Length: 222
Ligand SMILES: [Zn+2]
Image 1 (cartoon, protein in one colour):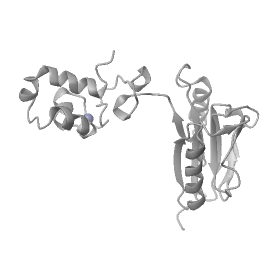
Image 2 (cartoon, rainbow, N blue to C red):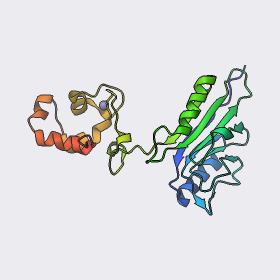
Image 3 (tube, rainbow, N blue to C red):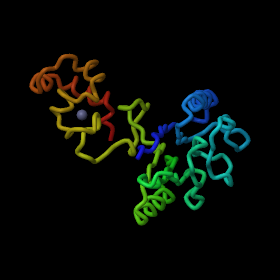
Image 4 (cartoon, rainbow, N blue to C red):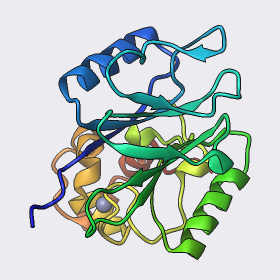
């Protein structure tokens, strides 16, 4: 039996920008098998602009003004909007498979406002529903988690973690030796500030430099 066709997914926050929308539109016109999970689309007069007449379907909660999420689907994909899990900040779609060996998949585009609890009540309800029904779920979200490590101007509580995994690479325990000597996720900051530090003993000989390195990572913030 032939394997099911591959589908590409893209997650993007358009920041309400016309130019970002035009870039996405061109990409979807060329890649006509791509699903786009979108947050903060370009809006005019309360409606999403710039993503119509590409050939696919734009799904969202059409009862709200100024929607902050939507999902673009190629026309050959069979899908149903799950209205009970749609709102201004959540668009949920059930993808129906033609292939008996492929399960149905639920996909969701979520916007998590900075002043709301995370996950939002509506997203938590969706996750609980999928767990109870044993449904496959893919969530693409703008979680408003800020950290200077990934380019934010500042860090916020959502960008921080109590996990023992290194915040720079998420693949090793965050020990001092790992961050100073090994972590590839902080290569840029290490090269700028620590230069060619070869041992922990050498690094600890210059405490001010270590503090500057940690500050540059944004890990000194309370
Ligand atoms: Zn690391």
